[in-house]
Amino acid sequence: MAGDWIERHEGLLVTGPTSVGKSWLACALAHKACRDGRRVLYQRVPRLFEALAIARGDGRHSRALKALAKVELLVLDDWGLAVLTQAEREDLREILEDRHGRSSTIVTSRVPVAQWDAVIGNPTLANAILDRLIHNAHRIELKVESMRRTAARRAASAETLDANPPP
Image (cartoon, rainbow, N blue to C red):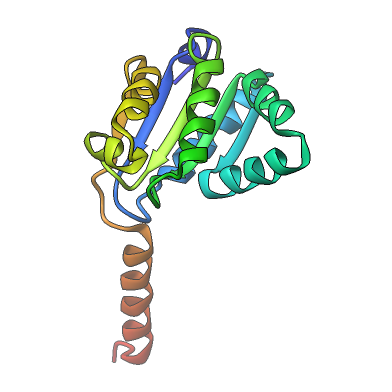
């Protein structure tokens, strides 16, 4: 990917099971965007919502949302680990509204896109959020074996070979 999708303010949704490389791929694309001189921010979704809740409490909430709107590429990693609270739904809608048509967002998730409305938890806000998130986004669904499982199998195989050297 040359980065043209970022210039066109398109998104990227990367889904698949645990440990297949979703975060790695998102970070690689973010790193490329950084090397191309773009402003990039990586956030794990649970920590982002935690930071926004704290910012809401100490008066920095609107400033935090404005900062998220200004980056050219926002990576939201680990989306969908839990159903969103009302405050998280509203924050996500604001973030995506501010970014829609102006910047790009990468979202990684173990949850298939077709089930994201259940993660959002409110049909009205789900419609507004998903409309801004998925309709101008490229989708990559990773369907490979877990990298951790593959590495463990290789390590076990190497141990077996070490324990049984050829005659």
